[in-house]
Image 1: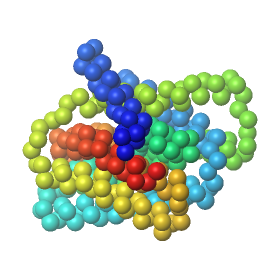
Image 2: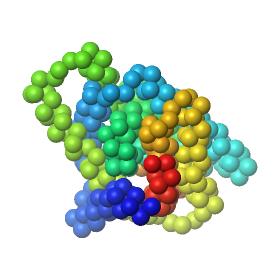
Image 3: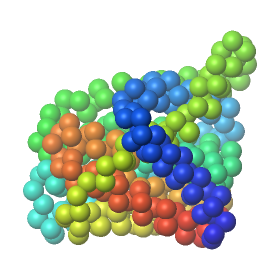
Length: 299
């Protein structure tokens, strides 16, 4: 277990910590760096990975299926918890956001690569793109339960650059096309910058830990993300017919802490952004231990 922590979890945490320290020292703002990830590095990584992936269409569809089933299970559980706790609409939306949205980008990609190698990264990229569609469609729908506008639900996914990069990458892969060096070299360079920059962004975004109130709901959302979600993914993967490293990678990805983007959605739709930020921070910190234990079990 110690070697998993030292070789997989700690390297990811150290890069994020260095990003936070740098942001505090130099007063760096996250917006321009996050924009680089969003518009350049992340799409390049998605395109590069999908254009070279050896995953079959069948396996890719099964991966998508596991992610959708896991989302549905966690959302149902979150809704039941909110009903029992008598949450108001804004807290109900914020709790569901925190419980259902794993950080498959900033943390999921590097952890999958370190834990399972290139095979894990290929699975993680498919999960990352699927998660991007979910957070920009179902995630917005969930956030809108707080009372915000619902008109963005259908249009939002089409503003996500990685989706177009995914379509282009799949097309290149299916056609077996060889990209010229003038295209392949810059794309590969941008893709190589994606994972470390994502971790720096994560560190910059998590500098402020927020207050410690509402501990019961914060703990419940963290439990859903770090414990219940990987259990649901394990069952879903078995039922859908995935095993080995693919199943293990999906289970670990399902156990990622709450994604930072949930704070953006919560702010936009007035879905208890302070609460959602606490869930992001606490689940990220707790995941240092939970991911170490989980990867030791499934690897």
